[in-house]
Image 1 (cartoon, helix red, strand yellow):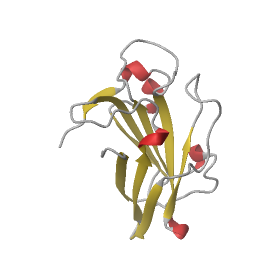
Image 2 (image 1 turned 45 degrees about the vertical axis):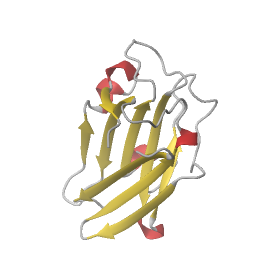
Image 3 (image 1 turned 90 degrees about the vertical axis):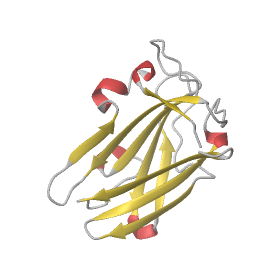
Image 4 (image 1 turned 120 degrees about the vertical axis):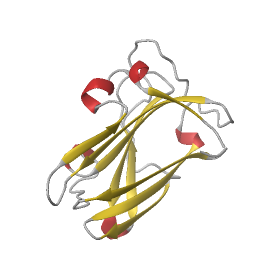
Length: 158
């Protein structure tokens, strides 16, 4: 994190770096980043401050396609290929490295200060060379996507 936004990176092995349609992120490789800028732990539908971003590696273009999925009242509509995102995707043997910077302007209610708390959940779907798989922290998508209160809490540190 920085006062200007959030950074995220993955180093993915055993992947085809598949992105047949980055707008339909569920059909290829994707990192889904769930963020609650208020770390609000009460059961609810998505509201302002809750975010579901998806980051799809476009390895041939050396960048990521980043969107924000509409799930409730948090945004007016699903947003595709978000402006202001900085990214880099590098293909490696049997995989890729993807790095992205999400500007604070894309994170409703983000308070980028030391000690601030965020709700966070990550799901990485991989179309593997050997096998497809899903990795997650802290909860599988099926258990967490509809319930922001279930996401882990992270504290912004040095």
